[in-house]
Every structure is written in structure tokens, then in C-alpha cells.
Length: 89
Image: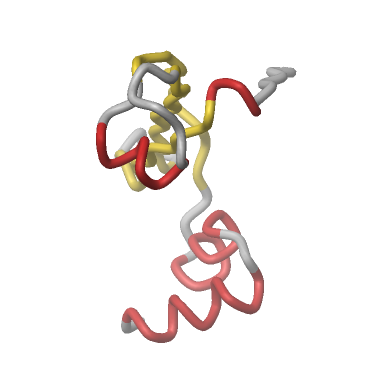
């Protein structure tokens, strides 16, 4: 599948998980999520329109396939003052 087809799939369905399963027959699980905070850097401060001393939450995630092979890595940033996280298992 070429990149353009993947982009069109995501625009229509909105799910990377669904893309991996339907188009690549790759079922996966979340191996790890690491959530931490830090003081915002210049680039993120400009994007979020907050001062440089502002806290930011970061979430790094790793997904693996059935054999334990890493198939996806993600990094998400959240404004610390506008985010609530709930973890349920």
C-alpha cells in the first residue's frame, strides 16, 4: 500500500489500529505507555501558545504484533493544564 492510500484510509476511518488490521492483517497490542511531565520547550510553547515555564504531559507508546515485534511508536503531547488521564484495565 502506498502512502496516499493509507492517508485516505485514515481520513475515512480515523483509526491507525483499524488500518493495521484491515489493510495489513496485523493485529497488535499496546506493549507500553510511558506518561511523564516536563517544562515545555520553545517549539511546543509556540504551538500550544503558552509561556516557556508551562508544564506539558508527554505519552510515549509502543505497540507490538503477536510475535512481540514493535510495529508502532507514538509520542503525544498534552497541555498540562487542560488534560485529565484515566487508565482502566
